[in-house]
Length: 564
Image 1: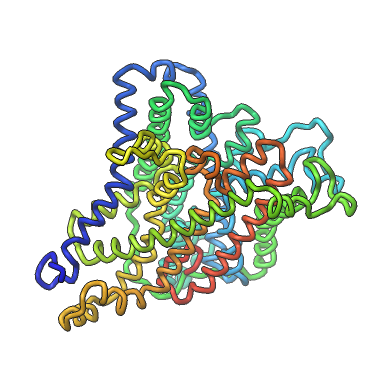
Image 2 (image 1 turned 135 degrees about the vertical axis):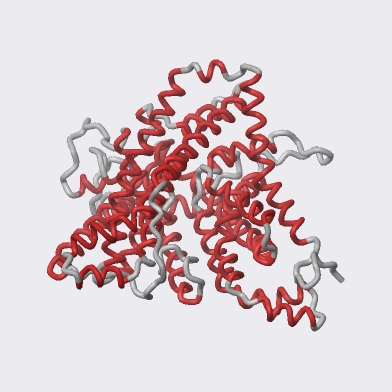
């Protein structure tokens, strides 16, 4: 028999303290440890050599420069697709939106590898088409511009989703009133639609900027060969060259990344100041523009952009997987499936990576689901300041770059655990805990959305009839939130299965993940094997996204990002 928080509340007394304890372990403790080590290093003067090193400030500049340029590309692409797919009468908008969001779900190191295979003098695809640049020509992507371009491609869906969410609630009434007053379509867009959509554009730009700041896969593959180090790749390099000041240095570098990210969000807040445009009421229909004959130009333009963003890089990746070595042109004589056979049946390291990634993704998805069901129950049933603070603490790790989460968990678990005298560092369990921290918010959002739609009266009636907490949970709540719980599992599995940014610093022999092995294979010169693994990873991503698409009609609005 459980005691309850207060009379009439169906929440057992132990539940909220349990949620608080989980949040302390996954959010507060790692971040507090990072802050402590960073402050300690600064006070002891152990970081003097680091902060006076010109390479640090050069890396900071590269980090900001590539993120800003990438954000510009993201805003241009995201706005183009958001306005055309949300406000116009284009056909096939569902398919176009699904395809445009796909790059966000593909691991950044796979995106970078695909674009490298698509460009430059050694591209198997370009050689097969006889349009490759002359041998000896530089790889254009190994540059600040190349990194920024791929940031833009990778994060444009974030701008699209943020802007689309705002456009979906713009009422048709205001647009129709302006048209009846004689305003042209361009005038309506300029005077009504654009001002109301600016908050969504700014919010999307801020998210894209923060995501670029913490991106590791793209600058690792494109920047390191050209000696262009961002702060995330500098942390990776510092950690690879382990020394007595490493922990202090990476704590300071992680803090710098966080400061730049927070500065970006502060700029967002400043830009939104004074732009408090509110929509009073929703007409139930999105403001729509008929493109008329321009439709025949808009559709080819959008499909051409998607071809460059998705199809051409994927074809180049397939070509790179079919040739025996990078730089060999793809012909009927050179094409073979040896790379796929090698990674699936011969290479033990790739089998280990597949099993580790599937294990970590599955454990993270289902393990977090158990926690998030309890957390969502506690946070939705208890409406006070403390519950809002706990909810905010859950969001913080997801909003931080993954490499900072990795550093936090290294600092917490590098030493053996007290009493047990067992260390988690170097094991698969530290990666699992870091995943729990990084993706807690992702798992929680769909489940919270489902809980907010539940009427507590049914559960309260069961409680008054004598049903215990777990009986009510299993017989009433779980069946009602099952679709959202399924979406939560697929979303977390999709993200965790191909992750690199967190595991790049946490892996050791025997705990490599798919993202780590793809990066290591490419770094070691086995571009064909890296390409073959990347093709399989993309296939996995598409299959899981299709499953989410199939489930979308049964889910609360907003659970599947690219759906209305």
